[in-house]
Image (cartoon, rainbow, N blue to C red):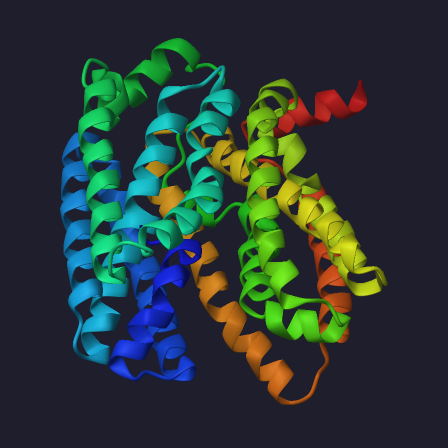
Length: 391
């Protein structure tokens, strides 16, 4: 319930009720998102120590409080508090519980498992906004949001807890790490968060990791400016967002198999190549219908990146401190998605045109991809990489 694609369906009604301007809401939304991202590092520490069932219940409770405040806010401050809770508990903590638990429990078929659990986001992009519009035909926007929140949270609590309850090695971080050591102790080393930050691989891949959320957020948020630059129909571009969700969903179905076959670390440097091609199509394509090629290509990168990056961290750095490690990575990603509109908005304000920004984004992605390709693996994997390259 804290994802931008769903909140966007209700925000115009909230702004109208409170008389808020787009600029004011943008500041509130960006600030709340940055604060929620900062708090996720602490959540990661708890995921490495606490029972995931307890974390699920607490997060669901916070999400319902956020949903209530979002539909009953009377001041901009309360709007900010509600968005913080929605982003922190829903988009942040619950999604992190899913990815950490899955990545930690599954080793040999991690890619497939992550791919299956990751289908929730693209499915939501396709189904939830349209469902919200249909329900609002019969109910107020407040009742619609509360109804959708209640149904989804009930599913999380009932189905989620029932499915994992028998598997203590899934929800218990210590038992999960012990299971990994028993079955794969000779090939996995558990890095602490601080030791991860000191590795050359993390530093060299950081520019690569931030460009995805940064660019996707900007392309979607400023789609009006993009449509004006291309002379394309904004309504057709909005329809293209649903097409984006469908393609991303389909890519997610197959990405897990690729990760299990080739490993996440070998695939990771190449996941932004479709996005580079997609931005090139957006920059140079003259025909309006080629926008669907653009949406398909960036959706392909987004689907591949979601599965590959989720599988990458446990593959490189082990599972014992996975919650903290992934939360640091998520903080960087959400921070990039929050700062992206601010930076891009400034460039547009000083009359740097969309075409120039698109061109330099292609250059940046290319350079970051090369840097990531040559980034050295952690020491326990380096000898295997050298052996592979020699052969």
